[in-house]
Image 1 (cartoon, rainbow, N blue to C red):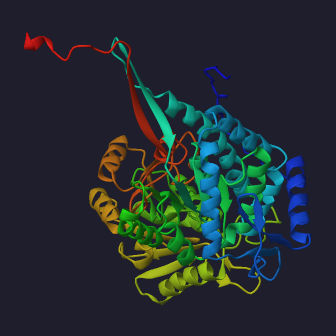
Image 2: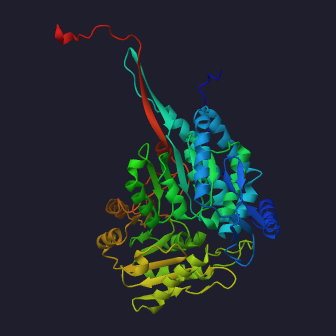
Image 3: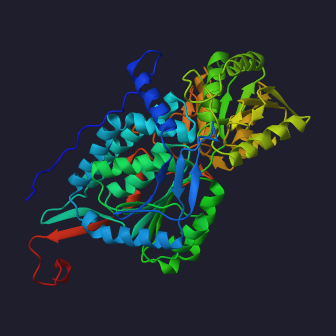
Length: 542
């Protein structure tokens, strides 16, 4: 019988490999990339309980930067497969929920070590191929951030369990953290492999069972994630992965009485629609479902007149164009003061025009392809709109080509209208719009920024004037869930900058902290009285 009071290994953020020319890690990753690119096309099954499920509906997987190339196929399913996945999850629930927490912890600590070692190149290469990320981007996302999620979440789990109430003499008060009663539905995006894994792993770690629907454009990487989960010892049925239409999955999941929670990252419109459906079906459920979502952003950089131009320009170049702008936190609108605007814009143009664009196989490429033709067409339409307007001009970039891959040049739009379309609407691509404001209208510009967007995910303020920083932080209190001072508004690190936004950007449940984990448990208070009274009378009765 286990009777130890265990302390989990203290987590530390995974070091990011540099992949410098001639380094062993570069040669190893490049070899794995080429191997996976050139291998015979694979077939990715759905994972339901102990079964690897195939169907007659095979759908092609291709690299966004080389869309004619065939990586393989995945098996598209139906409502029946969703039902089977729910049944498999519920069948696994009791044994998994009752497993001692330290064993669940061990599984995910093992997953971290497997990813740090034998699976690192494979998951990074899959992310480069499937999501067109360069080596550094894949390393930060697929390897480091996910390793951090696994290790830090284990520590956060212990932190949650250790949060216990006080007890007066003669009694003992306890809090028991039960998994949710039912199953969790995870809907995950294409842009971050680590997010996809964490949306499944975080609820599972807390003793829940999960039905997972990954984005179609991320299934190649998701397949590797399932291999890691299985190698780490996640039991069959705890995490089930299905590929079905949103309509089919929603019809089954949101009408099931055992639906207990939604873990979502994706568009604001879809999230709102799901929330409405859950609300309309509330009488169906055994309990009130937990709804956790991180959605879109219209993330900002604003510079005070005291700012250092090179710092602002570099924040724009990195914040807007790393990851092809395909991250919820990517800078998308900028406000720069008139006194230093010319210098900032010149540096931005110089930096952006020096970017190399192409396949992730060439490690010198800073920019790669956007994820799909649908995304390409949407982003191109915003660029075309700017080209046609008199109140905006494109100062660099503006070209695009999808003949071989979905390539869009990093594009900077300069507008005279702070309410210009590309200042307000989420684009989710390599497009940055900049508005030059009167250097003496700091307060007014802060107000404009705050009221321009319904989103409130990330934002950055640049200033050498501490009064301006304090003022900006207060004025923009509700404009960003992750706020950066003299830094780009991207690059949140697990355990350091818990991630999430409010307003139209989600429920702000802060992935990368204990705050997310407590959403996946239902606490039970237990009071034990050692010597119960034997007479009903209180002293006041005499």
